[in-house]
Image (cartoon, rainbow, N blue to C red; front, side):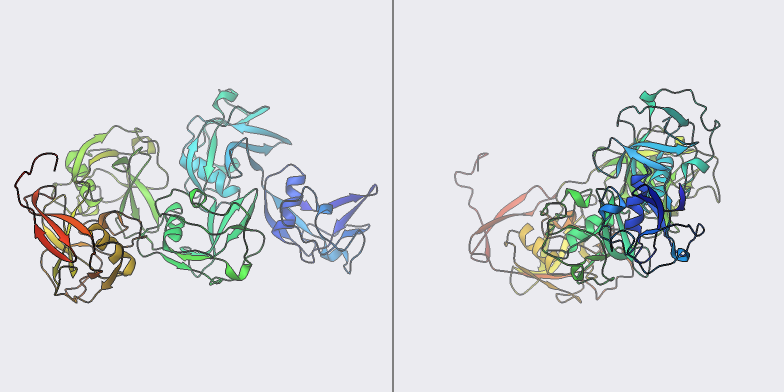
Length: 554
């Protein structure tokens, strides 16, 4: 699957000059040969000098062509090269078949001169991720699945045990020799790769946004590009959604190839950038000077997330340490541990600890084992546990089901000169205690969500630096990042309930809302968020409702 590229023209084999030879040209050569994508486009006769005619020079493939002669070029035998400039390529020995798109499908590998499949025995996210990295998807797989139909030919691999940094299925540890298995094609393994990458940044969590479509990487236009769009990209790549920065105007340099997406209108809660409304793939009115970029915050050490669940309150428990996500072993993991985890995640408490594999196998390291929380810790990382290492496999990854807090946390504006301005305070649906919001990252979009939640309409101005006083009680929210479409402030991105990063007493958020011309309603004086004295706001002033004739219908 590697070598000097030679083409046949008029019955005669010859070489290709490396002038302008790029990965797009190499992709066309590899796909024409029946391989997957190219991993390297090489020049300077990397595989030795050929002989005969140099048939092609100055190729300018987009990557979608079926053969090299279909790409723009100087013309057959028109060149200014010698054989010391012969082009070469390294093609992947893996491909995806029968998927719904170019980044999902049944996994097939090429070895001993023949394509074949992989059995799903012991097939886990690490194996699926290895297949994706081998195909050129640097962030690996979003899920390991079967369901792309049975293949044909040989079943080459069975009982794979790839690591979370493995780069090739063929070199992963396995329980059987290549070609040996106890499977049939109804057990052929598949994967869904993450079709997004960040390019040309100073670190891995920033860069030009590129997406994969029809076998090629391309860019995203910055028309309508905003924080909500960037948030979807960051979450898809496994980063934090709080503190995301959206860049335009080719901040990380101009890309090449197709501009695949334009006029994105994400809400911020989509699971994939392709799920957002847009013009349609490759439909745009842009050039590469408008390539979009993003900065994605790296999760805090000890941050938690849930994976593999059908709703946001359940899933496999995963923890972020160092620079990667890993799992928690179920050894000694009980309801006290689950309560701490659920509260850290912003839920009320735990319903249950779920048996192993309920939410599927995780990937990456197993970070925690023998966790023994007392139950009053604020973070799982603060609980006693095995000092180092573990004696577990991913078949022991623990899962939890959490109790959600009441759906809407009560919110108010305090110490303003008029009812429509003040310090933003929220009442935690989990504890019932009033507290403040940190102004780190606080902007007009966040303030507008507050104003709309309070019934003041969708216009609002953000006030920071404790403009309405410092307040008291806990700082419930920090690094709030709203897209503007949320119904309540608690649905915006944030670090987690009662989790802050160096937020001081003078960093309290406030809001100034537009005075109302209509009527809004609030509940006041109750012991919980869903009861109280009924008050209405008319022309910017709050007042009460008389109980004459007041009944259940009202």
